Picture (cartoon, rainbow, N blue to C red):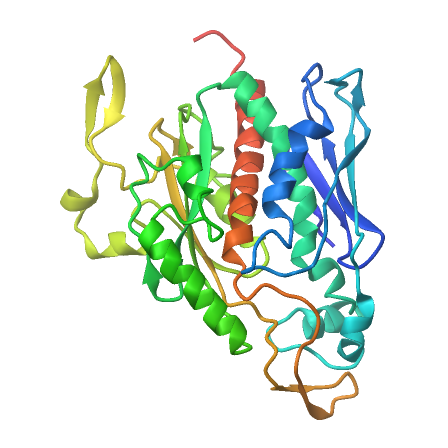
Length: 363
């Protein structure tokens, strides 16, 4: 199973949803970087369950412990291992899933691929796996901040079901994003989104939506054409997250409706620096960052676990029905915001280190 991501800044996540815990091993973190559990915990707190009445009620503190790679408060350059215990696991709630495949889940595909699976909450396919990514990304952010202090990664919910927010990506702030449970900086849309999520939960249903993200203070030159283009690695990172169904950068699919004259980002000199007059490229041209803000969107499907009876089949190949029990999010997007930010940080940190390793000769 491919559980490793990255080239120079490389992470390997491990653990199952209802096992003893989950975690990550980080390889390639530079030495002498100040690091403690307190640097990691805030991002895990934003991702954890039970933080509002529109997410899963599972009660996990998600308290992290650094097991290796740090000595006297600084990184050693050796592998960093981070562990988060599972303290509110309830595997008995999933006993029926031992023999029944949940619709639109990974149960059938895992069973078909491996001939065995952990059916307790989905095991490895659970979104609880993303704890390792978020923890590793907190370290990646420290590396990025040390090298580019002005770099800022922000993600927010821009749509839930058919409710669209109006957000200025150039002006949005972290405070506005975190001002409500749905993590939408448009307060009017956020209120409607929260109401919609509560409504579908009461109906035993779920909804999906869009997360938008931007990165300000981007350096020029990140990205490794041809196959490791910056947008390609961002797309891979985002689509590796549970429940994702689409990724687009800049103008995305809407750009297909424009002509070249309408779509091209013209160059100008602004404050002595080469800039573009528009940003339909989303901050990437030819697979390489051009210094403009990154701007992209990630689509998330409705949560597959719903409490309504659904048609399915059993592991013995018999037709049956299944109404999911256990605890789940009626909408994954509020908790997916820090996950999108995490994958962005991991991709950027990896490409920053790759660029610095490659561009060593004088120009």
